[in-house]
Amino acid sequence: MMIVFLLEEPSMKALLDILLPKILPENVGYKTIAHSGKSDLQESIPRKLKAWRQPDTKFVIVQDQDSGDCVKIKQALSELAGPAGREVLVRIVCRELEAWYFGDLQAVSRAYHKDVTALREKSKYRNPDAIGNPKEELRKLFPGHQQIDGARRIAAHMNIENNRSGSFRQFVSGVLKLIHREAG
Image 1 (cartoon, rainbow, N blue to C red):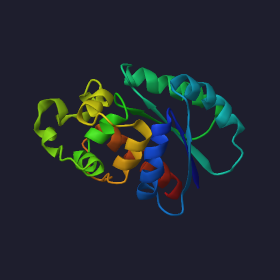
Image 2 (cartoon, helix red, strand yellow):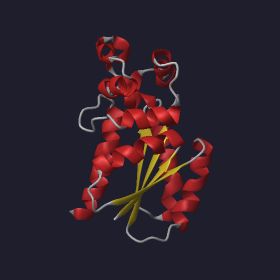
Image 3 (cartoon, one colour):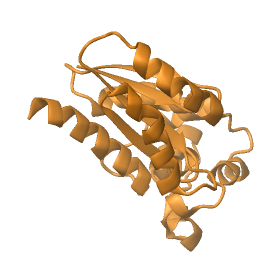
């Protein structure tokens, strides 16, 4: 089985290229394809799904919520994918990718060699998916943070089973269900 991940941005690719081997069984191949933002991703979905020729391939589409409505975004992405008749999982990252980082403050602390784990006790950070602008919050903590480098650094330390971000947990469980539907 092959899973193709269609991603909004290069930093998500950098993160998943490190995390997916921790999530996927060895017998499941994957390919991550980064796009240059939402418009590029959305325009490519129908083309890529229709043109993909490798048999036994499933697709996962991942896009940030930003300030949009999760349900509407997911519905729109599903509608773009629908005509191709492929098995597609759509996952929305609540707010921004950086919320997933705030879901694992231990990984952030290790990546940047500065203990920020006490933040989880502050009300603003208890629910990482509710942080208004997690990208900006991360830059306040680490002014030198660069998106792709930061994604790689943090991903190297992330604990798949212990992340406080609900959208991260939904992503992981959705991918695992997609795999197990095939096996079951």
